[in-house]
Image (cartoon, rainbow over the protein chains, first blue to last red):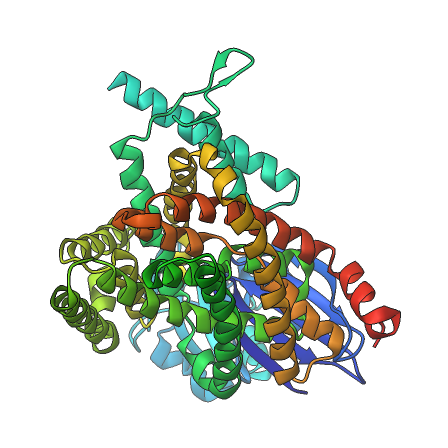
Length: 162
Length: 398
């Protein structure tokens, strides 16, 4: 698949994506965030305008197209793709195995492969938590890892009652 | 104070109304701004059905806003100037750019000489009819959906080349047309190149420094810094007898190398739009419609020949890009609109004001731009009918 990228002075950028067969998708990204989509039935055909999205809409639709599970209200399900790895927000539930443990004791990176890159506790955020920081119920962990590593981590933060 | 504030209020509201009407009728806003300036300005028509129509005088305050319009039009031209695109595609862009210049500047020069104008006057006229309107052309491309088609590459490539050429052309013309003998001209050309050279050096090697100058979290401080520095550089240029428009263009290219481009597009564009609208309006204020009769023939000849000129050069440019016959013709149609830069050149001419530069040329340019901006938009909207007529039905379905 070839993507052609062109600067459009005063407007923004234009991307032309080869689809299956002769078809092409043309996307014009305006400086104000607006995205216009066009369809060409062949490289030589006239472009037909399909639809226009605002910047905010485009990001939402883009997340759906990417296959990221999409629920704008729940912070815990926001994902940011990073190559193979993704960033996910994980809730530490009450009575889970991690509660009260320090990061050093929990040894999460050895056990699950996922890294905790920040802890959100109420209003404050602890970036880059050190080995002496502890996990408390109600914390939201910002974790980085592959899908499998994050699933392993989620197993540890669920309450033992489950 | 009350009187001035009321006048400026009337002017801005008139501009807003004209812009609304133009947008509803899918025409360019530029002729609408000029027309409303003619209508409520101090020159004819001065009354309508017995009601006085001289609502706004040609005041210094409006002139300053208009001057800022010129400065910011050119600043944004420099800001959006795509050096990468130019370098990537330099062979084809140079080819079609030279083609566009030779044909259309040539047609303009021929018209000027045929009408018995002097060399300097002819140079102004040729520049005015040569340069397409980036604003009208780009807007039409988006509305027509051509932006996603192959004909957009040669059209935008031509505009990029015209942008560089107009910067060089304005710098030279402002220096040469300053009057005086050969020695004065040499001194002013020297001054211009020293100033612009210094500015270009800052623009190219000082990108990191420029980046830091404008770096701030506050949008308020950001817009103030951009508007402040741009106006200061333009004012300093003008004080040294260098074209303020070209100075703004160079500053824009310098800022385009920094990380602030997108933010400027978001935050400073509204300021540019207000100033530019007042610039077009003030052109209307200064226009004396009683002079139109005297330049009607010239406008008629120029409209016909320069429309054909763009159709020919555009079609050839399309062929350079290996486009179909229909798309090549569209390149020509797309480049017909003339607008803001023709008016900038005419403003420079009016500022010099010798011979035809102060009277005939401004009247000609206003008439010409009114026709070409409207005609250009209409031709682009009706392009399918035109290509069918000229190439036959078969070509349209290629």
